Image 1 (tube, one colour):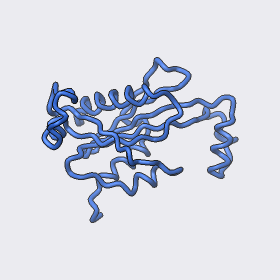
Image 2 (cartoon, rainbow, N blue to C red):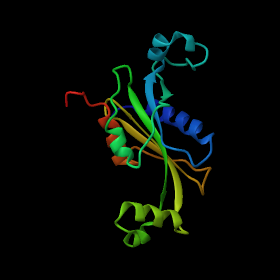
Image 3 (cartoon, rainbow, N blue to C red):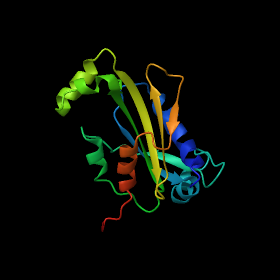
Length: 172
């Protein structure tokens, strides 16, 4: 099992950064690079980027990323250069307890409207990150429980798979 501690530490930083802007944000994508690599490529960042460990990961927000209604499909068009060791995404979603699953319409737009209007919906922000070696981890914070941060390796497996796929070679 790979050591995911530096991925988790970076995701915690991303979650704090995103949380500082409050709720109702669009999806935000981050490239994860080792601090040493970042400072080699961008030496002017010395003193502005924590340099405690050159192997630590630094998140670089991809300002040009604009998610469509289908985030998974949007991620399918992304390729990272070799200097990027991982990536992470932060996004918000609403969900219902499983007891309402049978009530959700099959049409995607009707389903989204149904969940958004439901009195028992819960809003969640997830931050999911992966590394080129396949390591993955996710964090989640519920709007209703702002002091609790949930974490698991396989928190949002479909989203993690889509992020890992961004590291495929363009020949595949």
